[in-house]
Length: 267
Image 1 (cartoon, rainbow, N blue to C red):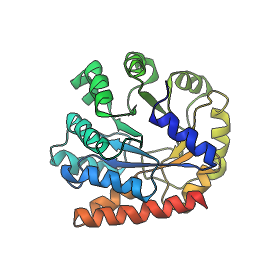
Image 2: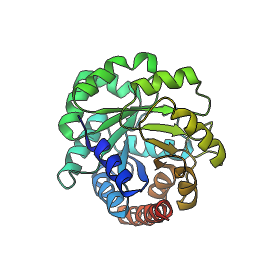
Image 3: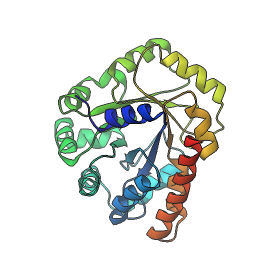
Image 4: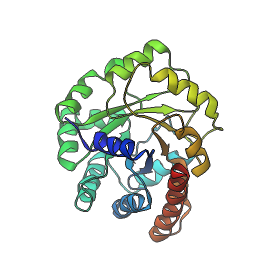
């Protein structure tokens, strides 16, 4: 059963285009401003949205996104509020895929079955649970699959081939390749290394491969997308939200960044 993620990648492939996946933290900049910001992402060229669920210990994130989580938590943003944001977003956009990206604790607190049911009802298309190891992902995987939701997994430069095979066997929607060792927003991209790793991953899956961590603009997005099916951009967008004095300024800054990256991908 196809969902929005599958349809979006199929459409992009037919057009010969790469996916632009954009990440923001729900509630960052104010809970009432997240849904307008999501619409702005789409208007500026985003193909899929990763909506970050704020968490008190976002271990995979660099300082920029950590501060975004802190700002969102200070606004009282919860997993349930994130799901409500998606529901509100769906009132104006029934096509753009939305993936909730977060950590296992809020899902466990809510209950995996309740999460899967509420996410489906809200219009969520997939989940990426950063700290959920493959060995423990089975139950949530089944609950999501039963409801037509996709479970997105991360692969890294240090992932062994054996583990690649296991993770790719569980994954659906697309596979997110972390292009750098370390946390989000760190280091410099090595396109040759990225290309070699994506070639290796393709031995284990036919799913689209998207590359994230370290993408700063259109040039770096274009370099990594040559070897994959899309680019994931987060830290530069979260930084723009954090540095903006008003919600309008944040939307404008994000619009300019996304438009530039979109142009780079389409070049």
